[in-house]
Image (cartoon, rainbow, N blue to C red; front, side, top):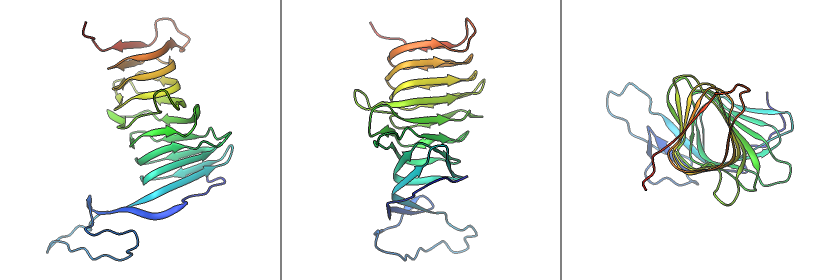
Length: 231
């Protein structure tokens, strides 16, 4: 369902690729290109357009849904509603700084963010990942900004026997890990509230600044592992 939404304040392209390779001589003001394919080729090349900026506004209680991959230089999430992405999000995700814009961006199972996820104001934005069915790196960029603007919340659902990895730093006010799978945080984490709400594992390869709590309601639930340090 689509609620009140505004998409795209900059419709120009920042890149255009054919089968993964940028078109030589690309220019945002050029509308037509000719690409040669090998003689006898039977498959149509994959053409991917990268928008300069995609801006999406969602009203309170509304949902804006993208069924497939989304590619942009910057993906700006505004409003109090929920934005769902059914494919990979290849962009720098930024939550807006306008007052009362604590909306949610929800990434589908087995999908990832190729880029970072930050907020233009402290304690704005909720980022949610559905439980993966195979090992995956959920993000290769930073989540939030150290000593600056933390995301309000990061929610990660997990599946038993499956590992979900954050490839860089994580700076959020509250991080909730549910399910019985494993979450690896590669970089340093500034998380005042890290809640393990299921019988899963959080593995930190660097330092965690903040409190860690078992919020499952059952004693002895949840595991926290820390990488070895050199004395």
